[in-house]
Image (cartoon, rainbow over all chains, first blue to last red; front, side, top):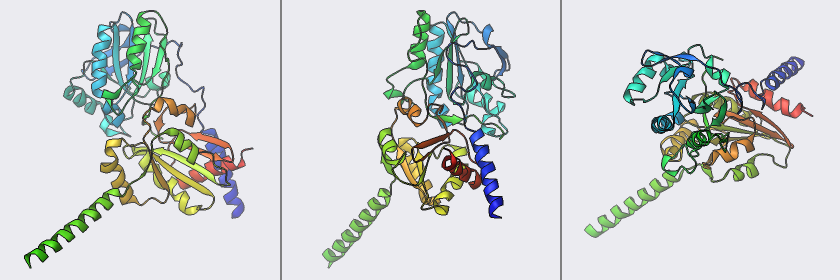
Length: 202
Length: 168
């Protein structure tokens, strides 16, 4: 019995080791070319990223209804979309969660939320969860800024203070847009923030 | 006579006030800076395995796995030290975190990390951490393992203890 327990523990240990994420994980790094996608939006249209009008680049925000961090950023994403339009960038939001795991993130719930908040950007549903793994998004919110050629120029947070919009010191995405518009590289090109894991079936 | 009643009433009121203040004082240890957490809880000069789990009351998968991680404290009180690092929002500590702790009576130490400069410290936990929670870091005699995932059983958590112990 003891031996069996030991064997099982070892097997578990090996399993756990295999599950360790590696730094060089899948998904985009700054400098990679992002693939195009077509996803269903809450207004009933299908949105293809490359077909959205943009003179300087694109912003893809992985976000959702249910994550408290996403909720804290909702109003800021709305202002960011307006700012992006001014600066020649197109912003789209994608809900990457599996609604069978998180019913609050169903397409119907997305339609309700985008109406309630009068979203000024396409709110897309990652049906079948194919787009977020290609980008390498791991959490909500998680932002990717691309230039006109779809080269990823910035990955990370919208700004440096999730908890308090009034206390923000660094507007990372706005800074990235400014840099790209001038033809220079965003600095920082990558930031990290706490967020909710993307919900998938185990 | 009236004076006496007034005096007693005042004493009772005062006593209740003290009790209320003490009840509100039922608090969680707060760490203002990430470095305090790293210094006091990460790699310690002892023979124990240190499991540091990042969670929050608003994080559903965190709440699901919490019992499995907390159970380790009861099962291995001498060999493993579990620290549950809450990333709850400051304004929700009284409203959500404290009531949650009172209700669940966790066996492991809970600390609240208040350091909002997350971009500065996420990489210090582990460069592979994207920032999604739950996340768990394990330290044992200078060795470190990091997991950005949800645990689904006590056995799985025991597995990570064995992994770090057996790693050269």
